[in-house]
Length: 199
Image (cartoon, rainbow, N blue to C red; front, side):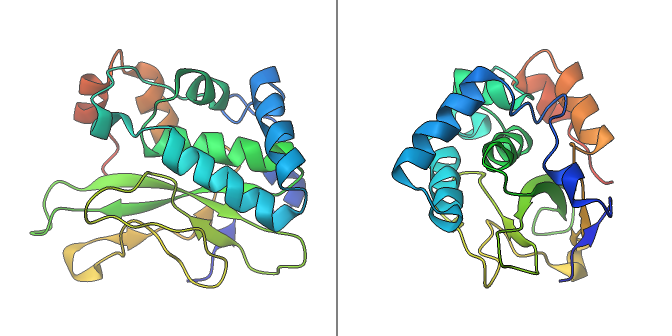
């Protein structure tokens, strides 16, 4: 799938934003610590991926009622749904000068019901000409996402026959519908009822 830059200026995918707040001291400190052990861009991007995927539980798996939407909050509170974890990963990438974008899938149940938007990150590493999508949701039985530049190793592969979609657009900040849902939800239970069903 060819990904589409919403903004032709690559600097947009390095910028500090309201949610992707990689100028926050906690984000910069975490990035610096990772870079000390993983100085090249590829190993850093993979290490940051593993950190977010494996050490920050997905709140719907863990039962954590808190809702996070800023990268710094995700890293501090160690919780978030796919959107929030994607924001944190994007921030860690941008903190090291690696272009990172937010992108999305529309997924459904096995019968095509209950559509929901799922959050991903696309990364553009030095020397690469193609953005590579990554899924930091967190693995569990039946879900085995991996860091990969050559082929998408996401939590789920879309099933077009059920109305599922890989959205090709790359966003510098969370999609407005995603950010609105995160900011409005007083807790995870409320968020579950108001997750975007499409973009």
